[in-house]
Length: 302
Figure 1 (cartoon, rainbow, N blue to C red):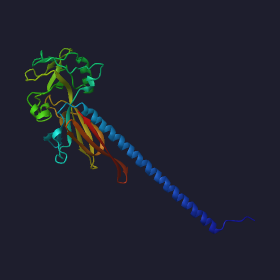
Figure 2 (cartoon, rainbow, N blue to C red):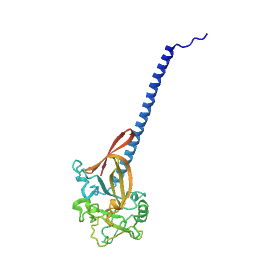
Figure 3 (cartoon, rainbow, N blue to C red):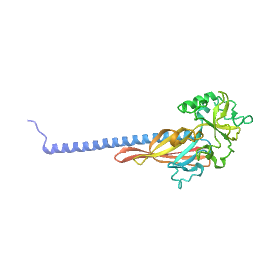
């Protein structure tokens, strides 16, 4: 005769199994929640770090005194970055600057444009840049600009040169003479290549120019613009491949646009002395009205 379990024993076993199942399910839920949280932290950290590094890489090669802060809704409201007050200038959320062409400058064993001008033989129509390889420069710029900027064709999209130190009309207000403010292009000069040699031809041969021994070659201005989204956060878009020195091109109407990072909550910038400071904060949604946020700060010494 077999002896069966009593009712009390069965109930006791069921209670124990229920406790074990409850603990196990809580552990599984907690492990899954930790996984979701850690994945969100990794994703938002990686995206924010990549975005701010891209910004730093671009700003590192900004032309001195060209960086300005603008009001996205009123381009006539602006300040040079050196005079920006974050506590007061809350409407100035767009960062705009002109970057010199480091890509073709550093592409070869020796720079493809030397940055040196023979100002003794220069005129209102041309100058020579000894040691330059302007054919190679043009190939690189042409490809990077999606075949829009060219030394040699009839297009208005031309590279330009900025001589340093700048002493021409407009320099009393620093970067405003580069076309980013009120279309003042008094210290930036659109150029063509002189028969695939080391020489530059000025597009406007009648324009008064102050030519010095050193110059920088530029082919694009840049703008970082926070665009508000329905969720209350912002996409940070990079506007590039536009030339304010030709036909008064602006980032609003003429630029190529790329989104650097989505869902940002903070994008701040300022300059103190020769140091540009950046702060970027972004969020990653993890569901149920919860999100993970992270901030990155960088400084660029000019």
